[in-house]
Amino acid sequence: MTTFVDRVELHVAAGNGGHGCASVHREKFKPLGGPDGGNGGRGGDVILTVDQSVTTLLDYHHSPHRKATNGKPGEGGNRSGKDGQDLILPVPDGTVVLDKAGNVLADLVGHGTSYVAAQGGRGGLGNAALASARRKAPGFALLGEPGDLQDVVLELKTVADVALVGYPSAGKSSLISVLSAAKPKIADYPFTTLVPNLGVVTAGSTVYTIADVPGLIPGASQGRGLGLEFLRHVERCSVLVHVLDTATLESDRDPVSDLDIIEEELRQYGGLDDRPRLVVLNKIDVPDGKELAEMVRPDLEARGYRVFEVSAVAHLGLRELSFALAELVAGARAAKPKEEATRIVIRPKAVDDTGFTVTREEDGLFRVRGEKPERWVRQTDFNNDEAVGYLADRLGRLGVEEQLMKAGARAGDGVAIGPEDNAVVFDWEPSMMAGAEMLGRRGEDHRFEAPRPAAQRRRDKQAERDEAEQEFEGFEPF
Image (cartoon, rainbow, N blue to C red):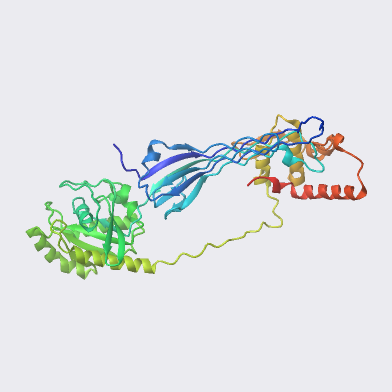
């Protein structure tokens, strides 16, 4: 039965935003109560958060589909819908989030580090929020936006200071068991270790973590054995320790050739050339092992390696090794650049940026792309003529019609708003937007009109101009 998983594909869905409410206040003796529809609630996000108590991605291997809750719709009486609850997914420290193409989206290191894998949809505005001096009684509300749907790959890379690498049965598990309190599986056959083991070592005032990586064999960097699956767990380690078996029973192996083969696999995997290395000649409690260690030690030291002769079984040479590793770890930590304070980068929009683009495709279809037009389309209830007219007014004020005319669009040409797989397509008629005012102001109810003094008329005129410029974006929930 699988107990350790370090790579999964996760399918996450954020919550949908709740729809806005179109309601009119009704109360005895108050026939003109006005619109009182509340806004819809925001959909819940899906958030990946580092939790130190989690060490594997096993839960997501068994249940790869996760969904946050939806926002509630608005209600009459200016009651906004409840926001959807965010879905917090705990992941181990060192989890890398990638898209399906292999691009890194986030590298989650450190307790509490989080990443929003899927963002919840905005709630739709109710007709109370859409009301204005020009539009006193909107008979429509905006729909909530759908939440994001994302497929991400989670890949665990063990966060440790020291990595023990070497052939199977070289004694790595025995070594980590005596240097720390870790209790890995130990046996006298190859590939006893099937998952990385972590232990904590204290040497003087330095405390560091040590990882026992499953044994490597020739071809590990190309997927042979277990190497390709677990070489990623070496990437974050500051120090590499070659554990060489001086008492192997295989006649075609010796410590020097083992070192050369493992170094070649690390080189082919890439990205590990700058890590300091130590060499541990293990099993010197065996007479032949002690003799072989003394024989190969001068050759290894001539290559520039610091060599330690140890026996995990007899507890020989372990103190010197643990303090040497502590020295290297402390040096690596001191050389690591300090994290700078988070800087806020402001990127103002260019003055000539309209916020959308209009392109003509090969089949003659005109496609409009942009955050605002696409969001407005998603929020529109196309079963409500007044809501469609409101969309037309917004697009007209944004300048979409003007850009269509500049692009060569004529009456009857097809226009699509949005991406190819989820677009609204219609036959364009210039009068649909330019002549919208001929149909009357949308949401206007003349029963609310009364004689107004000159100062009030001026204020209403100014309010109309402000609405045309700002599009009431400030009312939209974040």
